[in-house]
View 1: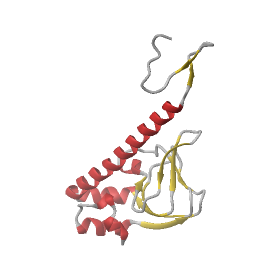
View 2: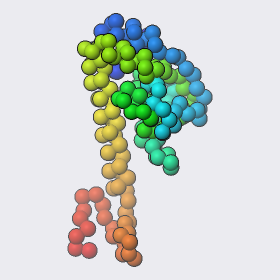
View 3: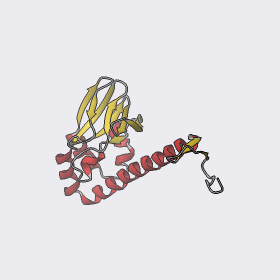
View 4: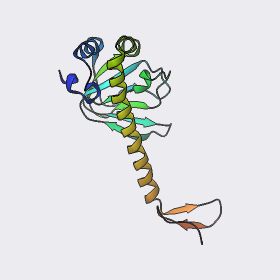
Length: 167
């Protein structure tokens, strides 16, 4: 099974993987299906099997990440003691996921602390990578902004790295 090679589980023991596989629920969803919405109870963790999932934040739905790599994990709010999801997850194509219930996953993690530590280090790497990508997207958006107004009729043209001083 592909899950054994997923980045998330690299370095954990065979018994841990067997327990992980045992609690997974295989699901298929149509394009446009929401797996969860921002503010919904964070009850499940997900691993992408095929397809793609668009993660968005806010009412206007700013895309923060596209989950498109087989074995990529999302819905991590359910594993870090958050009661609700911080983003919405919408299938942007016909999608297959492995759904892992929060309570069952927490039992496995609690009963296997050494493997749980490795698992959470991998999860932290995933979250960190998305954070870096978000920063880079923000900087690109900021760089493409050519005109800024500051509550007056003045318009300042400024690019990233330039200063507004002397205007």
